[in-house]
Image (cartoon, rainbow, N blue to C red):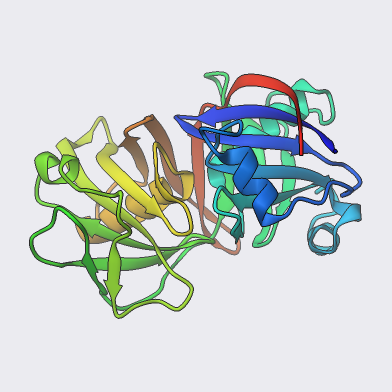
Length: 292
């Protein structure tokens, strides 16, 4: 019998179990993850974030070669046992736990660099008590795949966007159409993607732009997981897609609302190209020890 210490954190309802495992000694199988995340027989969560010292995991060693300050690495697995590149909400959750346990220092204005499977991500505190993260570069992946979803009478074209996780963003005609979507079933894309795609559905708020900030509302079906109350990568993909559709003059700062609440997304230039920044809360629900 193994004892597992964890902290449950939620980022606008996207709940995650953060397990601090500095030496990479806690082996968790897909079955272990599914048990921990089960909302009836386990603790309940959308996924597990293992915080591992970068020197203790091969992917972390690559992160250290990129950024020597990236002491910690995010090993993220969804509730279904699927390993993902990273979680944008998970970055904030991991930063919350590491700083509250005094395993990392993050004074206001300073940066905590966290290694992921798609490069190093930088996290800072923001003025509202949450965190903001630079989640890096993005790209259009081309094509307009058709998306079939329960609750939509006809398939809709989507826009493919890569934010470390591949997304298709679909614009809907009304808030009612967004609300009546049935995301208990996985939407399907045509053509199908071999690794699966996360799908984000979006409608504009009224007005679309207020005080220079774009405003939209979304729901997200994450591949290998299902619908979540919020999604950091989904919010980034949605903001990028709507800016793309809006054309020249569209804002670079967006408020993206989801069933769990709203987060801020901004686009800003860097020497290597445009990056995405994202800000929102990360709240500790409780901490404890369980057995496997």
